[in-house]
Structures are given as C-alpha cells and as structure tokens.
Length: 290
Length: 316
Image 1: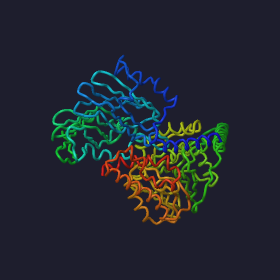
Image 2 (image 1 turned 30 degrees about the vertical axis):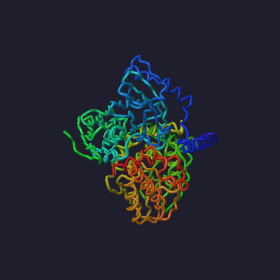
Image 3 (image 1 turned 90 degrees about the horizontal axis):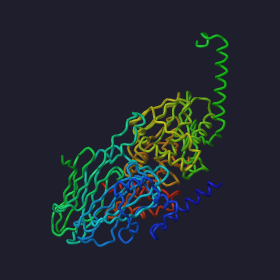
C-alpha cells in the first residue's frame, strides 16, 4: 500500500514538475545540495584542475546554467550555459568546464572562448550515467573562477546513456553540418550550430556473447576559427552524446571563412568550411581530411 | 545403464539425493504464485502486465509476457522485469503443462521484458534473440539492473541478464514439436533489436513492443524506422496479435492506428521545430502535446520520445 502511494505520489510530482518546469526555476532539495557539496569526486577534480584557487559559488550575475531536473533520455540530455556578463577585451569568460561527477569520466568538456566569440555561450548534449551532481565552472581571462552546480536525476525505465542504433552511428562517421543564420549581422555575436556524426562511444560495454569490450571511439577535440582566428574550441570525451552537437557564437566583423575541425580518438580529422558573406548557407561535408 | 555399474546402496543414495534435489526445486517453484494467464489462442498463454512503471508493489509486472506450448516443449516469450516475475511465469507454465521449456525468446533489450530470464536458467533452454541483442544488453544492461534496484528494491535480487545463445539475423524458425514458430528480426524501430514471433498454427503474431496500446509508445530506436515497420506490419495477415503493452483482443490491423498517429504527429511537430531552428530543450516541451489525453503514462515518456526523435530527425 505504502509503495502504491509512493508511486502515485511520484507520478503526481513528475506531472506537476513537468507543468511548472517552464514557469519557475526548480528548487534543489537539501539532499541534492549535500550531494553537490560533499562529492568526493568533485574534491579530486577540483584539486586537479584548480588546485587551491578560490571558486566563487555565486554565479547568477555571470552565467545561467540550464539542466533538466530529470534526464528525459539519459543518452541525450541538453545542457546550456548562457553568459550574463558583457564581455570586454579586458574581462571575458575564457573557459567553461563541464563536470558530471558520477560519469565514468567526470571532466566531460572544457570549452575555450576568445574575444572573437562575442558571447561565451554553449549548448550541447550529454550522457548521464546515474543520479549525479553536474557543474559548470567559468574561468575568466583575469583568473577568476565561478561555479554553478545542479543535481540531475537520470530517468528510470529503459532510459540508458548508450545510443539507439549502434550500427547506424558508425555508418556515417565524420559527416558534419555547420550552420549560421542566413542573415549574418556583422559586429554582433551570431549563433553557430555544429553537428558531427559520430558514435562517441565509451568502450565500457562488453559484448555478452563475444565477451569482448567494444573499443572506445569518440571525438576528443573541436576547433572553430573565423578568418584564421580561433573563436571556439572544446576538449571533450564520451560524456558528450552520440552525434556531438554544439551551439555557440562568433563575432564576424567582415565576410570570411568559418572553419570547424574535429579530431577523434583514432586521430581522424574532419574539416568543414562555410563562407560567411551577406547571405550564408549551411555547409555539410562528409569528407575525411586525412 | 549408469545404475547397473553401481552397487545398490549407491543407487539408493543417488536416488535419495535426486528426490531431495527435486523437492528443493519444487519448493522454489511453489514460493512463486503463478501469474494470471489468458489463453489468447490454442496453446498460447499471455499475461497482461499493468500500465505502470516498475515499482515495489508490482515487482516489475508491467509488460505482456507469456509462452507457447508445442507437442514436444514450450517456448517462453519474454520473462518480465525481475526474477520474481520470471518465477511467477515459470509457475504458470508448470500449471499448464509438464513439458520442458526449450526456448526463452527475448523480443528486445528492455528490462521489463528480459530481467526475469534467470528464472529459467535451470531449465537449460536456448535463449533466443535478435542478432543485435547481445551488444544492446552489454551497453545498457548494467544501467537497467541498477535502475531496477532503485525501483523495486530488494525484489530485484537475482534479476540477471542472460545473453542469447541463439540469435536471429533476419528470419528463423523454432520447432516446438507439431508447432513451428517463425521469428523475424526487424530493422531499427522501437529498438535496434526488435524480434517478432508468428505462430502459424493459430495465426498469432506476437509483436511485443512493436505495438503499444493504451499506454504511450516508447521510442528507443528510430522514429522513421518504426513508422516504416508499422506500414510493413499492417500488411501481415494475423488472426490474433499480442502487443508488448495493452489489451490482448485487439482488432488487426486497426490496432496499429493510434500508435501510428502518435508517432506521425511527433515526427511532424519535430520537423516543424527543426525548420524553425528550435532547440531540443524547447521542443520537448511542446511536441505531440495534443496527444496527452489519449495515452497512459504520457507525461513520463512523451518528452523522452521527443528528445530521441529530435536527435534522429535533425540529421534528415
């Protein structure tokens, strides 16, 4: 009986949760706060990445960190970071670190920005292995560090961080799509969307018949430049979902070429280019540069 | 032959041991109350699972599972979300026939259908599944087992994965003695490892999760693939169909219509959002929202389906 009540309660909470999700920012429960603050994995990662440097937990004036409270699909969890500060050449966000404490590889992504980025915003999709704290640390060019932390519940049922169609994922490796808004606005930040077809697998699963581990195969770096100057780069791993997807900004001052290069763990390099003029189209390429 | 070479006392000891073992085995079975079964066609028994998520109260009894009885032996089709449900299914087999279980067919990787496999381990059946099932079990199995513990607690104990020893690439047949089952491995649809079973004798098509009724379909493969599979399925002649979730007396092929309507609406809404440059996070809030009143468990799965479909359709 108790269990039934609990299920009903859980369903009600789920449903009302879905209804109010848009309206107000969700509250973090005391247990979740404790998990965020006492995480042993975070203590290790923090020491490794930042040593004894001070990290300011008050990031609200600086960045907005959007993560769903519950991963609808644990294989494709959208996360976004939007900057609230106005970047100047003297003070801008140079790096954003994305840490998912309980994933097999907690340091999921390190994104780098430059003044040519215009805005240090990033949107991507990650895998979530289990209930875990997830955090974003912003590093300014001045050396200041700020952290935003959330808690994410992986979905139950048949939701799993692995992909949906292993064979299909391998068939089109390296195919890329690079898009900007057709009406480019010069001297303003413009949104870029980069999609990479790649299985991005961890290699942590063992075939139940052959008893062999699948080899790890994932994208490890992304570098985007405009007119030869870097605008965005990312060091990533298999915490990023299959078919890695990034939305970020660049600040064009004149027509030029936007170039994206992706390198995976087999040292394959994939390049796509997009001419940015008064009207820009999207570029799709399936060529392997090496 | 074996007994003749042993002195009589040893035979007695062995016989006594055999009795003890048999008694223990029976005692194990007796602990499980048999699942309620419905004989949907001659020799085809199906248990209708609840339209719920696995929880302590239902022990994971949330999917349609069952068995088909031949003249020589029995084929079990799916085993439930836990060892406990698998044992209850085994008890149901024993209540119907003394024949052995020679096959355990897993229709796809989802935990509510296969985590009861271990209940049949001692029957030494051939475990049968789609050629892509072993890889899917490897990639997702440990996550499923952890989720089950979270959902049903200690009742999850012993709910092990058992990989298929016999796999199907396209089509295959299983002979139960006087009864042949036609197995068909599908291209990626509900999952990338969907298997259907057709019983020629009664014209029964066991679709498992390629067909959802009443409860919202769950997309864990390819929305385009599933819509294509629905077209192909609708042309198959069947006198009875068994959905993975839903009623057992559905009209065929009309039973496919609500599921087709839902998936088609989801795809159309997402294609529109993609054309507008909308993000995944925003799209899951609205896609197929007008279907809400038509399905059970809608709020648990619709957003998730939308996320999966979005990630697929953005590559069109």
